[in-house]
Amino acid sequence: MNARRLLMLIGFFMILGQNAAWAFDIPTPQNQPKVLNTTPFGTVKDFGPITPLAPITDMNSPLGAGHLPDGVEVRTVITPSQQGFLTRAPFLVTLTITDKNKSIASLTLHRPYGDSIDTRRISIAQRLESIDGRMANVRVYQFAVSPLSAGALELKFAEMTFREVGDASTNYAFIPVTRSLTVRPLPGFWPEYVPVSPALTITQAPLPSLVAGQPVDWRLQVSGRGLTEHALKQIFDEQLLGDSALALGDAEIRLSPTQPVPRDDVLAQTFDIRIPILPDPQGQNATKGRLPALRLPFIDSHSAEPGRTLRFAELPTQSVKWPAPASARAWQALRYWWWRALVGTLLLYGLGFALTDVWRRMARRQRHHTAQQKLSLCQTPLEMVHALREVTGESSINGMIHRAPNPRFMAALRALDAACYALEPTPPHDWENTQQELARWLPRTFFES
Image (cartoon, rainbow, N blue to C red):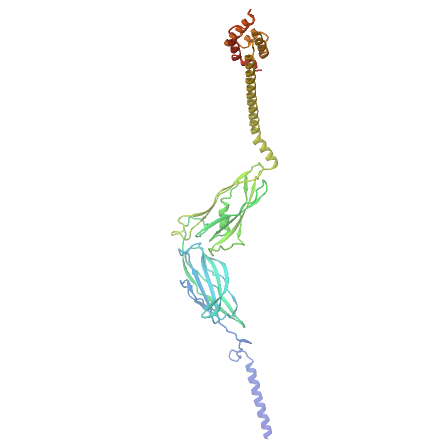
């Protein structure tokens, strides 16, 4: 009897146990056991959704919503220009992450954003810095932010995530506080592609040697803030006008791969411009042309009243030359030298004629002087007559008179003729006077041939 009762009690408790197990098989929040999110490194932290903080106007702040690993600080610094925030004028945003414990294994962040706001990354730097006697790992991210419209704007920061060394399953999330900005407008009468910058520079590389009919590249560099390929394209297309002597192609513009950020201004950019030029495009044997002057307008963001007037970066016009083709050079040489050669020939002929005339005159004077000396040595009238015939080439005194009708010479010849026919064997008493007159007044006509 006791054994029978014991068996019945055992069966009753077994039935109760089966009914309790069946009841727990129905999943309800109350009967489900809690499963801990654990890893070999510890329990995973669940921070839940992050609600961003309300916007503030402080330009330098470490505030933000979310959670950061121990020893990590995130600071955002906004550096406006001298005249505050200005439409299309970029300003600097610096995001600094200080890791005092050097525990960050990886992090993810994005550039700031907002309505009517354009952002580009400038640089990423990392360094070790001594803080409170310990070396901390400091990461610095710089962004150039340009407001595209005036009025009240909000500069927002995207959610940042961190992972610590040794804890690959826990994500720390943090959102820096949003900033409220008041942006000043620009005058609406300037085109939107005019850059807003405190300065703008344009330089050019030396031109290669030009050859007619062969294209070369005219290379320029433009540095300044607020520049875009579209804006530079608009500015250059309005000024690149070629002519029949020098053709200009469309400007090709790209961000410089060698000098993207000038050293003296982190917000500025440098663009490389390549402009094809073609000397003598129409084959007209042109040998020189002119590169147009370039004037790049910009609005000075540091002036007291930005946009009241425009400033310009200028590149003056340039004269360029190139050699002509061989046929053109021959024709040009002919056109250049023919009249010069003619003038030179005439000058040489005139010089030769003048020298010949001088030589002839000197020779004639010499012959005349020799004849005068010869006549002065004659001792008798007959000897004088023979000498005159030899000198003058005339056979008679009448021929001499007819050829050279000089009154003094004619009188001397008549005296000579009278002396030749005188009865005295000796010369007359005035013979010396007649001899001197004949030698003195001997005409040069006899020596011109």
